[in-house]
Image (cartoon, rainbow, N blue to C red):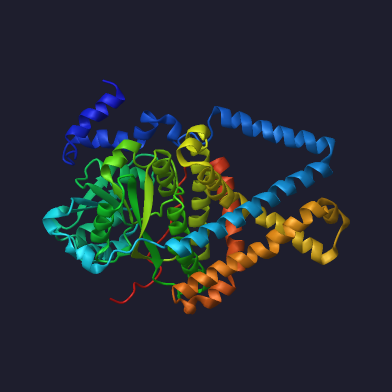
Length: 493
């Protein structure tokens, strides 16, 4: 039986039986190999496919050859290309922010959320992947108990690696009711969050599926708000993304920077992308997905370390859209710099992975999402990590210029590059600071003013993380660097 036919037969009797060894092995195989069997081009299991490798090596050889023939002209050209990238990215980010100020996230009032009769609510599945996190499992029980959704229509699957004994023990000690089902994922490579979610999907019963991390605290009405939003949104909306908000923004300056950044991203930039019908890189949690679309597009890629961003792009590439809803999920901001760099380097690496995967079909993607969204896709997915790395080089050049004004630097920046570069330096940084300040004002977060004003130090950390992520992209693209949680106190209440 072919893979496609086999999958179709299995879909008839989903969910699978967790007590059946045959079903568990089938689910594990599909969790790992399903996407690359059904659509190999869409899988990040191979970081760079044949024609991409040829093109990248050809460009490298061309640059080296040009540098040998005329190193100065080559350097000027490359600096000009980078400057153009800075200007395009800056202009696009301001346009997204402006759209976000105008459109904002979808608002569903408490009354509308509670107005839906229980018998009209669809079955809902919450996937909670956790690995080596015994300290936060107990909080999950309370968070799920606080959700206002009928117990008989809510399935919570706690996805634990079968050899993660400490977390399993903590979960079994806390999970004394039927509210949460512990589902053990057989140990197999890759050890990634999307593989665990894929495995859990085969045992899920919901028409809507969402992901929460074990330490997440979603607001009680979030599921009902999502159901209400899906009822009112067009049929081409496949996902509703809730806002992620950090509860420990005052723990130290790093959590302050991180909290302000998330406020801008989820409060204004993602709604701006929604308002302009651009592809939306999903957040790692609280993305609520139609199960029928998940089955159609292949769920998560277990080899992509930002499976959320990849799924958001795959949704758009298949002609569907993502909406952003005004409902919060509280998370823990990374308070440790080393832990933060590990997490952010994985995000940057995943953005590059996602870009390399989706650029494999450039014509089809362009025809599906249009010119503006196609340009934005390249600027956000490829531009974000690459520009963060380039910042290190350009900051060094700037410091060298101010210290000694060497002739070499002056020769590399003729007037037709110098003035655009100056605009990018001055207006680009000012625009970023301005957007941060406006978002804090709109959200009444004057308590984060110091973090907003000192954010250039945060940019340096981003560049270090981006350099690490780019290096790992070359050496170990599918390696998942674990982010440690439980370093902050939970909010009261």
